[in-house]
Image (cartoon, rainbow, N blue to C red):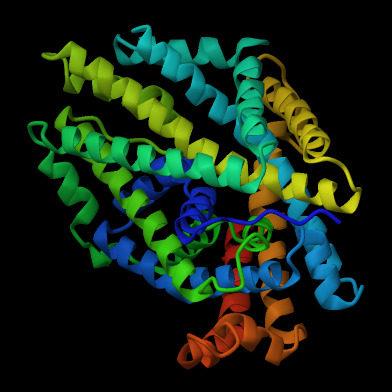
Length: 450
């Protein structure tokens, strides 16, 4: 059997895995949630949730993947001796492929907006920008072309393997993403009146914290780190046995959180500078912010033009680091379970995701395609976010906490007693009790029960 690939450096491990976590949600969902729910108070609560849920949940999936050194489905199968636990890996593969399909729609919109920003098509009043987005997204072919093009770009990375594809791309994409973010934060905070936006994001307002905000922070911590998708398990299968899992997880969540906070420092100062209240969701990215950039730099149109291009390039890079990880989960599965070449396995995921992207794009644009009273795209979003991800994350923690032999978990967590021994009992308690309870609360909150 051909030897599996693996990451060639510790930097590659951190950047690739952090890239899987950093995505479009960091740029539009986290800043808005923080700003509306207590600013720095929410951020502190979010960090606490990361420590309580994110770190143990991430490490538990790392343990499964690194020990088995195979794709997610076979990893759970190997550790469970063929018991039904193997379905956890299959669930993650299904979930990631569905997410890749509808995520590519929004990523394709970002790709189109890079072109639109370069061509100067986003200059105008709010109504013009709103009309531009509506016209583009409702076209039967253009958004589909952009979404499928994004999947093909992802495919081009995946077919080159772990080191020459995923790791090499991550070593370019993540530093570029971070540099763009720092430039945009600097430009935004230099605008007149921008400090009001900084205060809005970073001034703590503990009076806004309640049970709903706590559950929102818990959910953001869960979804931001790609828990429950089998991504972490798959990437960990490419870790070397010398990789310090706790340290790597800590570096990854630190990088992910920093980017989310910087995204807020990019958006809110510019919005407050021109007196526009930021919205949530796609309207923020594709309707509100083009108008913000236009107004903020009205006296320096060339600067506004450059800022717009950099912003949408930033979104493209953030989306690409996520789609690469989602694509790799299924590609690894078909490569190893059906003995296909990486090239052929990648095409299976590319075609499946492209077909789903086509129908999801149509469902929110040209055609009224509905499932259970929702557009197909919204249905896929709700299916994965409300059901598949929490279930996958819950089962992964229960599996590591209660089924996998304690000695095996200890050896993986501590690298055979070489490191992190003082934290093992805390980790085991979190995985057995704290994480399952937190995920159940997220599940109930997503369903509107809490």
